[in-house]
Length: 77
Image (cartoon, rainbow, N blue to C red):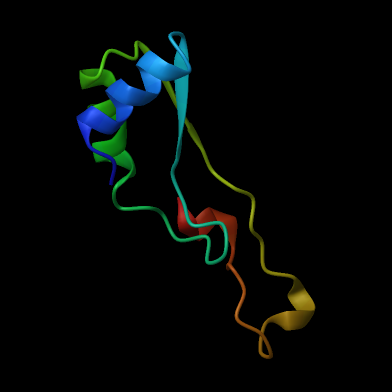
């Protein structure tokens, strides 16, 4: 989770328009439980346009029993 002060620093130093918050772990595909708080903190820091990014991560059929992969997208969201 990022603090409001971190988002304020980012806004002051680099961007005044928008921010994109990652909403899942790119390796496991699991939803980031801090995503909602990061969105709230970004808005509290003054970002009006906040969006999320879900990194694509799907489980190939052939690896169902042999490998740890991200799983089926419909069950992740």
